[in-house]
Amino acid sequence: MGAQTANTPRHSLVLPYPISHRPPNFVAHPTLPLTTRPSHQQKIASHDREVSSPAPQPTTMSGSSDQEREHALDAYKSKLLESREWEAKLKALRLDIKGLQHDFDVSEDNIKALQSVGQIIGEVLKQLDEERFIVKASSGPRYVVGCRSKVDKAKLKQGTRVALDMTTLTIMRMLPREVDPLVYNMSLEDPGQVSFGGIGGLNEQIRELREVIELPLKNPELFLRVGIKPPKGVLLYGPPGTGKTLLARAVASSLETNFLKVVSSAIVDKYIGESARLIREMFGYAKEHEPCIIFMDEIDAIGGRRFSEGTSADREIQRTLMELLNQLDGFDYLGQTKIIMATNRPDTLDPALLRAGRLDRKLEIPLPNEVGRLEILKIHSASVVTDGEIDFESIVKMSDGMNGADLRNVVTEAGLFAIKDYRDSINQDDFNKAVRKMAESKKLEGKLDYQKL
Image (cartoon, rainbow, N blue to C red; front, side, top):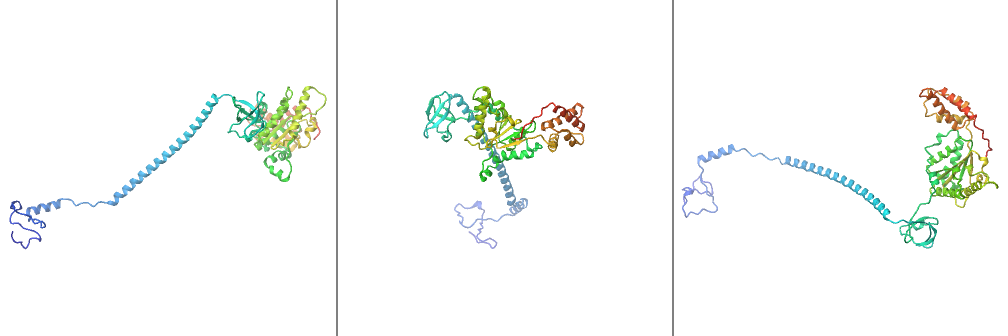
């Protein structure tokens, strides 16, 4: 094979002939590599390749990881915003579904009401046991009937109006109390936004009225603590135009209670018994809608003195008065129903109506004095446009004997005088002329004299 030279590397074998001219029976050693010496041209070409090839650039792993993290955060934020938007849309859709379901239920009930048969109106007379009741139908006959399971049987008391099934006469539902149209119209009377600050010259009367009406409704525990029964009603009497109706409206407006304004002359009916029935329904409606204030204006129309002689109309008025007395001091305690009556003829009222226990307090609403007239003038002139200072003291001295309605008319007449002169403000001369005009008009009115109660 030939000996190794000194420059030959270890484990390298130098062949005496080219590798392409190996003999056919040549076998290479399995562990020793076969190498040949590179030629000079090969060394130069290898060096040129090393010089011409660029050096590999180092990769920045930290920069690429930050970019990936920012990209992931942006994707998360966008998905989170998208999720919140879908949640809001889902909530809105659920609300829409709820509203549509309500509309569907209402429409379904209306369709059932149109398709269902009519029902009979009846009145409960007596409860036999837990399931059976004696009712009186509107046509007259009486029946022993059952009750629907959904109806509260504890509320089915004597006199309750109910609806009966056309076929089985089963009690299907409770009906509200039958209210006369006149009583219903009384309840629609709005007392308005009237405050006690808009009433002048009646400070003492306001205090006594609030003690009788407002205190038992707002603080009933005070009367229970002392052990007394609160007053039932109050009578306001005095000349016309002094503020009796205004006081009642102020009480109803400050308490925010139900308010029934009754004109006593409208109660009287030509048919026997109708006026008394209207009184019963009026008090029944008030007891069902407590707290309630009943204001009966011009009570002398039905509360006059009773006498033995008279026509049938006079006897009907007396029966109406007796029904009113029965409602005022009957066996049923009034509770939170308060009565305010007003009249300018207290001397004509029946003594039975004025006794204690029915009308516990009588308040005289007199003509205002100088201090009261000054307060009333300032209240009514607070919203008008004046030209300079107005001397109300001189106007008060010229308005002796005038009531609150007259003083309000003085301000109105002064405004009319200003309009006639094509002015937008009222001056002192307008007030003076208005007071003189009202004083001339007062001479035409008669003077009302009565004894103080």
